[in-house]
Image 1 (cartoon, each protein chain N blue to C red):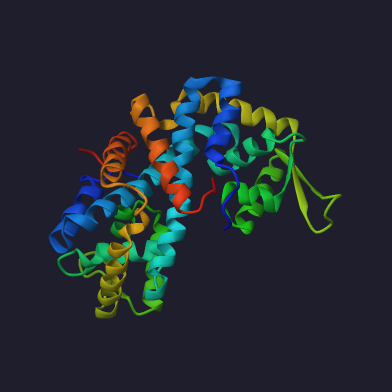
Image 2: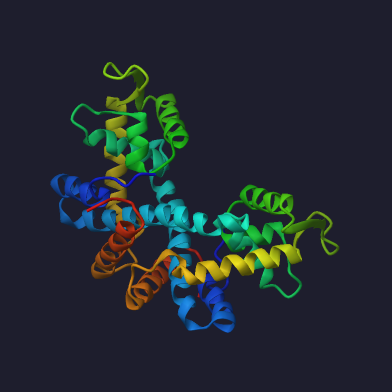
Length: 167
Length: 167
């Protein structure tokens, strides 16, 4: 998508300050920044993993699977870990299976659950994509190391408060 | 969605450091933090605007329309400003029209374009939702003022680099 000619966050903040004053304009600007940063980053990350036959959400699912002891997770649990709805987790796994990156099989422990199991092809794709993402600093090359750490720290407080995890 | 029992970003970082060292683990943690913060924030913002018959993306579209001189934008332009694909912009506008918050009409200037025009009901809903969002500090109440400003500043650098806008 083409870049805008003005910063949409600065523009929104100007409108907000005119009507509502400085106080609510500060968190509005921060929230809008997070939303837009996520959008442009996702586009960039999708481009980076595309040569490996992946989208970034599919890549994240493969990485999670590759970290488990047996390379497998029930689809419901995969969705919880990725913080996406069950239907999204199912469609991510279905797309990965179409490309031979995972196979689906009924769980032996729980007859109603379906396991996603990473294949060798899936492990190879995840590894190759990771090398490219690492080399591209995950699209964050414009930020100094301390700015990157600052984001992680500030957003941890926010995630904890908003129920991403319990400490 | 239920909170996880461990911080998924810290967990990913531990795996990354073991396999790839500290350097690529820093941007990976920051990017994963942005993605997950966006997910939990969006859920919270959707809850906040729900009593007004809105979702957060629909709210954003109404606010953009309310800021224009005549309360109207071609749907294509609305999508550009919201940085969403044309099909998403169309479905946002269709949902807003179903609820009486906008009307659609062919553009007089460009016969192929469709305008979205905010209604009085749409303006009232946007105003009421804004009051609730302002009161809830857009879900960012856990962050101090300087942490909120820090996010806006850091993410501006990132958005500029990733093509959200040109300065």
